[in-house]
Image 1 (cartoon, rainbow, N blue to C red):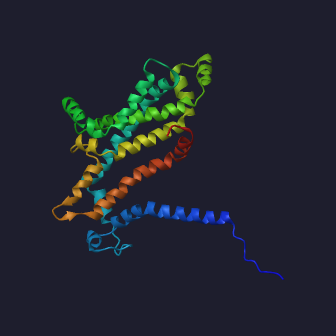
Image 2 (tube, helix red, strand yellow; image 1 turned 90 degrees about the vertical axis):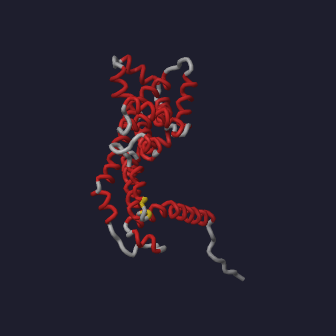
Image 3 (tube, rainbow, N blue to C red; image 1 turned 30 degrees about the horizontal axis):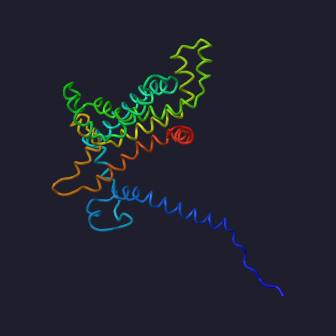
Length: 280
């Protein structure tokens, strides 16, 4: 007498499906705020305030036109990009030789100094706000791009040194010694041999410096007023006696995501290597 048996269930298949369901739920919750921001940016303000709709009933690009045609809006983006790029360049220029020194040499108090650099990253920007404001007022740097770029170096340089030192420590010291034996000067060795070996670390460091400087608001808003006013401070103009212009604010928010997305796209390969190999 034979008994019919159903198809055997593979336990690994069940775990595979659960894993996929979990990833789908995760990405839905991850992308939902971004979708909602984009949906609000193409809706009239009256429709946003009228009620809840999953999909826009009326699509308009008037909010984006306002941003790209109003100088008070698009200059905010230009100001932010200018001081963020300047800060990234300064941070890398200072952090590269400092990280090399921490990686290759031992000197009195080196570990204490290395930890002290990280304490600047741990402190909130509000702690240094008043000293920066008084110092820059004395030297006439208020409302300039260099003022914000230098202020952001306070927390970006320690982070850059910490990340780059991990990459540099992974490069064998024999490479340095071989280059010196072959007659390379230190600048030539550092620029032509050493930096290409840690280009993944430089890409990761540039990404984090760009991101932290791009999203910082307190120092950037306090140290600027008109000429170097960032886009995050300009977004507060949407509040008026008539209420909040949600559509315009959402369009500005969408455009603030674009520079970060572009940076991630260009350094995406270096970021993957950095998380795998570096001190990130």
